[in-house]
Picture 1: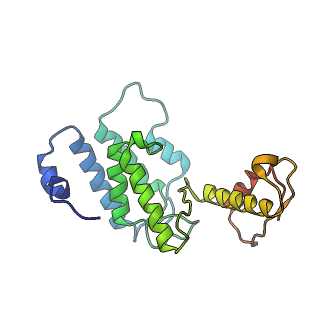
Picture 2: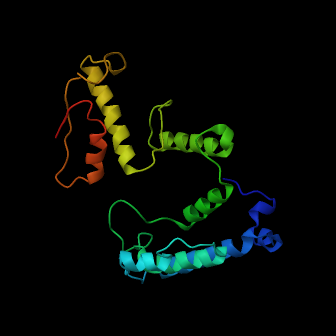
Picture 3: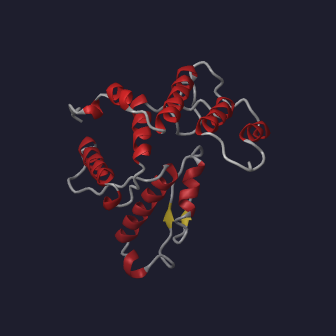
Length: 216
């Protein structure tokens, strides 16, 4: 990416000109987020509050009226200090999550502010273009054949599901079974080989493919 020369490339200059209603609540949230990240190396890795304590912090009953945006963020931040795990820090080894980079967090904030729906080009052209370029970069990085189809899933479980479905399609095709023509109901069984320490998300993914018997 090539930084531009317009004001969008100078956050401090842009911020000094912003006086609207978003400034206070967004800057407050940014300060709380930075404080959290700077303390994550030394704080407890596990959450320190019980579910009951967190519910009490957030408010057990539906309030009769709303509150100021800053107050809502403060309540959330107070709950977050005790009700989160330190997955963004270096001492977290639970599941395949965490370890984000500052630029990734900042980009996530920026795209949240844009509030574009990424499912269609008309709802946000930049989303589609960025995804297309990222797909091309992955093909190049992994030295895959040109024209390789790339898809971005919503998470690990759906990634496993997509891989299993694609592998099943290929295996059945090699055995002369056309899924598009013959369907899956009476398709030959497919064996799935897993290690004894595989994650539960693999089981969940395989469960979505049960139209064809999967033997472990």
